[in-house]
Image 1 (cartoon, helix red, strand yellow):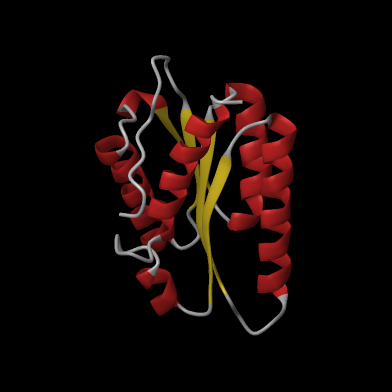
Image 2 (cartoon, rainbow, N blue to C red):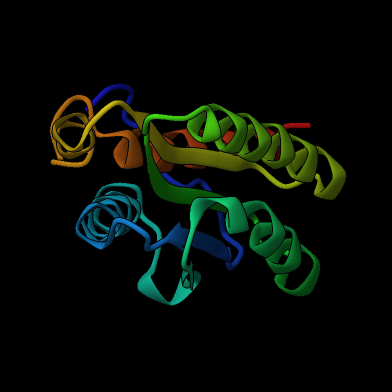
Length: 154
């Protein structure tokens, strides 16, 4: 694991994991890896996590915006997978999602990290969701905890 960070808080935190289940085998591993890191390694309690699912990655920004409005979480991890196809749909969807996640994070003053995989094939998706050094869900969980801790300083 890269930099070891732990939740530094005496208050009750609320973290949402919002996940696209379009590639269910990938998203299930992402959810397991992010949750394991948050709970076992970073000190987040299971009761502090809320998991919200949607069908596709394009729905993530809308759902995360709604989650931020309704639940006012201390942070959000976005999970999902987009695999490049034969058209430009992949690029359009990817760019739209990441641009909106940044806007939502700023508008709600809520840290949002992303492990929405943008890959060329299933093999790359599996490599980035296998719990190893390239696992983006683990990176997103670590980054979120770091941002939550940093936000307390400002």
